[in-house]
Image 1 (cartoon, one colour):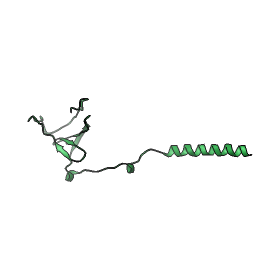
Image 2 (cartoon, helix red, strand yellow):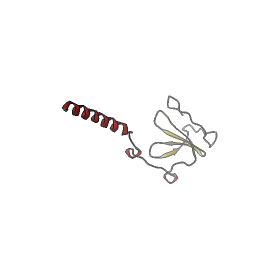
Image 3 (cartoon, one colour):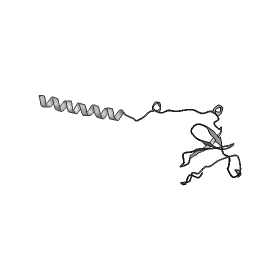
Image 4 (cartoon, helix red, strand yellow):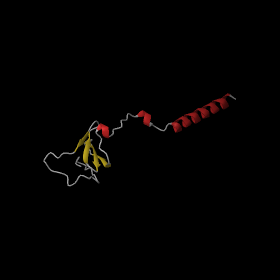
Length: 101
C-alpha cells in the first residue's frame, strides 16, 4: 500500500508540474514598460512605414516627410549635406546591413 501511495503521489506531482508549466504563457503586456506618444508629444501623424536601422534608430515614413525617433523625441529628417528628399510622402523604407536607410 505504501508503494502505491508513493507512486500515486509522484504521478500527481508530475501532473501538477506539467499543468503549471502548460499555464505559463510567458510575459504579458503588464510585464513591460510602455509609453504612448501622440501628436501633442511631437509624434508625426499619418505614419505609413516604420523601419529600425542596425544603429538602433527607428525611422518613420509619413505622408509629410521622414522622421527619426531616438526613444524619447521625434526628429524630422534634415540631410547634413543640404540634400533634399524628392518628395514629402514616404511610402517605402529599407534598412541596409551597414546602418544606412
